[in-house]
Image 1: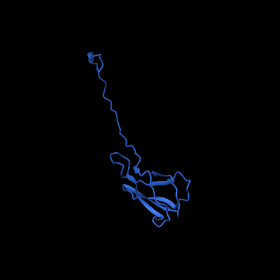
Image 2: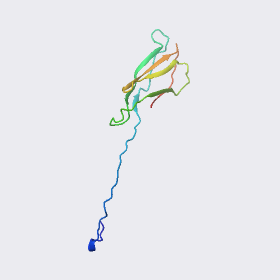
Image 3: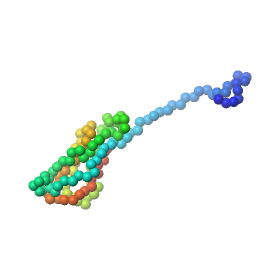
Image 4: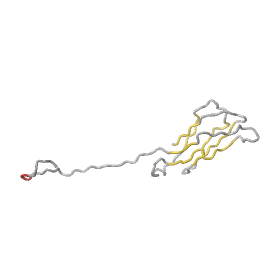
Length: 126
């Protein structure tokens, strides 16, 4: 309201105007928790198999939205080497087993006989 008054048919208010306000969805990245370290025995000894599985390497897998409205989105994972100083540690590359919609994923691996050492793997949700 202005202070000019309404004398002689004047108006101290403007005509109403409309404003559209739109709240748009944001695509949040998927979330998961990764076990930071896995230790296994040297393969080839009688007490240790060459191949194995680590259940629950990834847990808490979800679509990323805090209110769950993105849980319908398909999530897949990429597993790759960051550190390749020991390319001969594995007889076959490690893999992740993940069923769409599951809350956890497992690591499977096949070691070379009597191989020892460590490598850094990276997991990416896509």
